[in-house]
Amino acid sequence: MMPDVTSESTKLRPWTGDRAPASWGLGDGQAIPWEYAPAPESREIVRLKERYGLFIDGREVQASDGAVFPTVNPATEDKLADVARATPADVDRAIRAAGRAQKRRWGSLPGRERAKYLFRIARLLQERSREFAVLETMDSGKPIRESRDVDVPLAAAHFWYYAGWADKLEYAFPGRVARPLGVAAQVIPWNFPLLMLSWKIAPALAAGNTVVLKPASTTPLSALLFADVCRQADLPPGVVNIVPGPAQIGMHLVSSPSVQKVAFTGSTEVGKLIHKATAGTDKAITLELGGKAANIVFEDAALDQAVEGIVNGIYFNQGEVCCAGSRLLAQESIVEPLVEKLKDRLATMRVGDPLDKNTDVGAINSRQQLEKITELVEAGVAEGADIYQPPCDLPDRGWFFRPTLFTNVAQSHRIAKEEIFGPVLSVLTFRTPDEAIEKANNTPYGLSAGVWTEKGSRILAMVRRLKAGVVWANTFNRFDPTSPFGGYKESGFGREGGMHGLHAYVRLEDR
Ligand code: NDP
Image 1 (tube, rainbow, N blue to C red):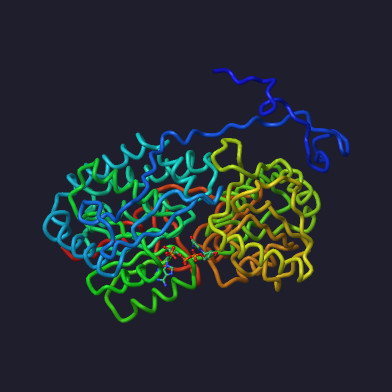
Image 2 (cartoon, rainbow, N blue to C red):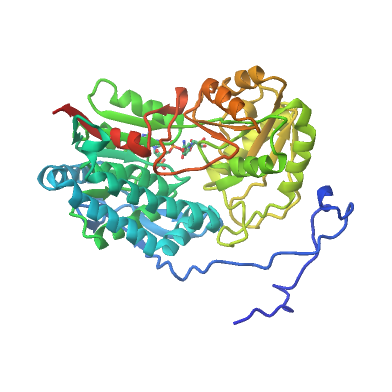
């Protein structure tokens, strides 16, 4: 049915912000002649259950003590469902199921047979992509545009990619025999729930391991929908087990003497605890932790393109991204026009209902995370930086934060040092490439960085000196399953993606 363009809800409304951005050439205070009509994605495709169980040994089971915890929609604060809360005994059961499946079936299955299952999972993810995208957005708060166009397609792409390696392990590691490690304990965060699951499960399975995965407590639903995909794909019982539960369950899982591999993505603080808990064991371990990336813009860069890259770098997924470009390092000669352009661009960003297809910045994942962002932004103001937030109305309910830009930031400010994990950009300046390198590397983290310049030689020179696992040139936040991702220093160690990601799940032996 065509919408009634005369109705109150859809007719064109005048701009309610302070003023039109200067670059739009409309004159100060002039109304902007358009407004987006609401474009909500339907929730109908998702059939939420009232209660979700654990996924152990191919079956949905309740927690051994019957306990559940709620998961809520961060955009509305409404409860979505109750989820079984695994006990240590449940985790042990899942690990035993994974061990049996690995020894009796999956580990000895020819690679081409494992590949068939992975291809099937990839195809099912694609077939059910809308359902996954809507569910992910409801449970995490991320804009539907991102779950639809980034998270879900990339998750499927990881399964496609690693399915391709399953029968080619001998070519990945020429002259060596690649053996699976055994049972992988995987703990994932809430910012990219399905994507982090695929980064971990796809290479593990391709190499012949089985897994027990603990999703984050605020975003368990896409992992539980993935359990349904495993059943649909006829994956042998026990190959994938999913155990939602609190932090202690994560620690119990990674500490188990019956797991041979630990993979964690999350905060540096928890990464250190897990590193300690696994020290002295022969478990293989990869940690993908926090970041405070520098996005470096030289005076010869194409500024309008850089603005898009900076915006994508820090406001993508509300800035809840470990590799977010949260520190903008702008060459002094261009900082003024660049900041003006950024402010104009921020004024066009749409904050609100994550299920609306026009939304750029959705809901913050939890009240706790919103409080952390608010606290750090208040610290930025108190320490003397200049804050800019575009005028925009935030929804009455839910956890939202305006895109924020700080100028006049000193390196000693908390907003320049600490991971905010929110839509907050700190602008610093530099004069020479050496100064840019020094400032960019002046952080305990080392996950990612960006360089914007017209000169290829400068890109190469910068990349060599930046201490970051990933450096993007004239772009930012680009991901591909063929490309390894991971950090240095307090951003962790080990790589996910590409052949490096496969290497993390095998033991290499001489022929
Ligand atoms: P955490 O590191 O606490 O959570 C990540 C995952 O680890 C979740 O599944 C969590 O479970 C689990 N976990 C928490 N504590 C332990 C533990 N002691 N042992 C084993 N597993 C554990 O991140 P937060 O959600 O607390 O976020 C805090 C900050 O961490 C953010 O503000 C952000 O700065 C950073 N962060 C970084 C991420 C990244 O991708 N690098 C991702 C998420 C957060 P549960 O959900 O049940 O607590």
